[in-house]
Length: 215
Length: 257
Image 1 (cartoon, rainbow over the protein chains, first blue to last red):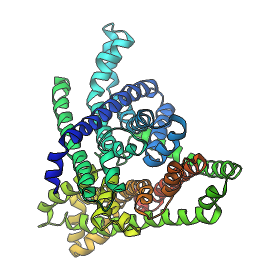
Image 2 (cartoon, chains in turn purple, brown):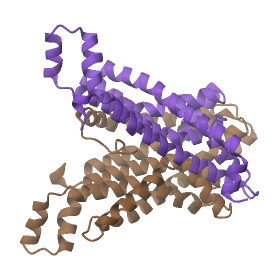
Image 3 (cartoon, rainbow over the protein chains, first blue to last red):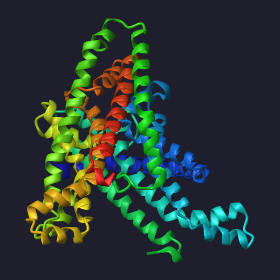
Image 4 (spheres, each protein chain N blue to C red):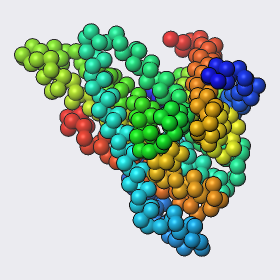
């Protein structure tokens, strides 16, 4: 059976896993965005806070994903809980850093002007600062998603959902007929999904960047 | 995906670097000491002791480091000359092809690439089965930073070099490369971190490293092995990253620090 026949033959299973993989990564990115933007808002006015948050988040990125997963298995067991925790933690860095960079890059004169016409602190944040920082935040989300696509393969080790289970199945069945096809289908599937999601990000960027600050 | 993995010059990032430069070695020491004390004070049975003992930990450390060093050496030997070549006139138009190829290499899941290479080479396993795919996977940061570093050299400096009679080779060696070194080192640090992290996958293809402890601990349901392996892998990664940041700070040309 060549790869094409294999994919056609197992399409039901493969498409379900591809869907689970995508949904897992997208959900983790959204959660990481909520957390990351929250952290960014909390610290961006304090240089020390920004430095510590960036240092912590980039130290997390240094940790091998397989090791972090290993540490979480005794605590959280198998399945969705450790998988999502790993993915959200790795997604945080690019988003926290870009939120801080984006928010601190907002021209103070614009913020002053907004306060001057009577906008409250909250509406300055949501309608001026976050709007101007949005392209940077979105760029962080895009980097996070690309990274998580690969890490989501590793978390299949802890029985997480997604295409990683194809890769691990190929590994354990090394030598049998479809082992290579399985690993190929899993790996190529992840590359294709990553490219598709990247395209969607370009589209979202085009559609949601405020007109005044488009290139 | 890695544009932001490269190290930006934002002030908060620079301050974050300084925090890590001081805190990281201390954290590594505490982590290693704590996990070793904890692990050896556990009630270990004979099976545990077979994997979890001083000599075998040292062997795993050696294997893990060997993979990391070989991957990084391969990356430097391939990516730096390739980056130089792709910024020379005449070769420049090939650059998008190679960058595109390296981009796909990195979009591919590292674990998938390792497993595939393992299966395609006859499922034998061994050191090179993990080193070669990981070198391919970690190539992009150094390749891209070499090219960007060389492209960003002020053309006036190159003109000046040529004007005082330097050959194009001398301009490359004495002007362009020294100016590109800081960016190349930043790329190398990213590649080092990728290499030391993905070297944990060596366990799946019989090439050793701390991944073996994690895998054995998980499969035999022995948390002491699992946790020791994971913490040691984390500590080693933090240590390698720290060495990378020290290299970044002190190996660049003096005038550019």
